[in-house]
Length: 473
Image (cartoon, rainbow, N blue to C red; front, side):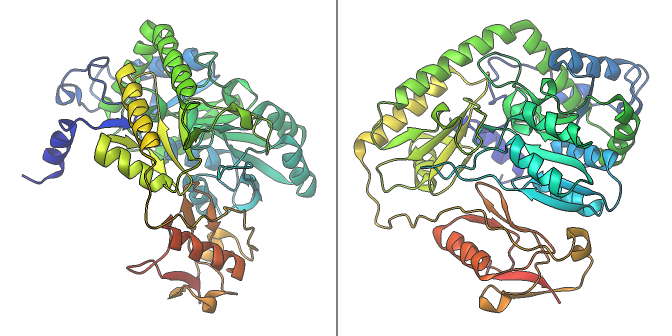
């Protein structure tokens, strides 16, 4: 029977190894739980209420605070998106100016629209010899805060999808000097601060609000996240907005999964992280022998404001091969049954966690070695495009633009000079090329068309072949 449930059951039996989230990696040998139906309850007596936690769920929050050394932690069942929306809503007022790294998650932009905020941007630059964006510096942050002294909130994405970490300590010092607050989207860094091999967390680096996705890099169910707040004066407002953005029927299965994750970290964390560290070190050493691929590594630290790099992300870059990252990912999945997290023209990215097995790393090593030796040629050579930071002109706020009547027009020179009515993003790296309220010019149009031609994944375009774009009438 071809239903979602039966298809998932069948897929689980087909031997695919997940080099992708969620961080539990379907490792049922390490992780166990009773039948979820047996613990799926509502707010019965003795089991507290997430939106007014006083008992067992308050204890869960306290456990998160102990593990992460945060002043206040809130378990999230609607993903990091709920934390981002609640955090931004709690510390801003309608019409406030905020400063954010352009590679912010779409939930940040949705919060900008919902709260009618005026955004200003910090643009990360591409690291030399890669197509990976670097970090954000304290210096560039300060320059923008001097230029716009009434900015209320700064939002930094650190780490990025590829594991690039910015100087959060330096940025927090500057942000607070100019009277603003700092939020860090640390969705990909829930494992930070739990072992010395991995980067320091923004929680202990001076950030005021931090959002982490447990499910991305630790053993927890999808949608399981945390919002940390280090500012006591915002606890009440954050709790108010969490009650708005989170479900009024929070899943006890997801919350129990968060609890089990913490239990595993307490009981086996040190041993699991040590084994994980050894697996990663051996994998990085192995890739040095490959001729046609290379792994993004800590040699990029210091370049383009890269402050640190998370070794858990396996960014396999094309070196001397006419394979693209897309083709490598497809080959790994089709021939070797290894499923990567994402791919671009220039690289394929795998996500790892403490739940990855030694056998899993070995499978990836063996596959890469075979592909490396085979020197596979393809008929259609990659059409490399340089991911530059186009900086379109903003003529109205995203919120204003979303309220305007719009139409779809063909993605040709006819759209140049028109105001975009939608968000257009290229994945990876995920940076928005256009935000509602920005003018489409020939540089941006050329960038979009080249990305389409190269097979990049674009979101926000319209029509069957994504040949149209929504613009304000």
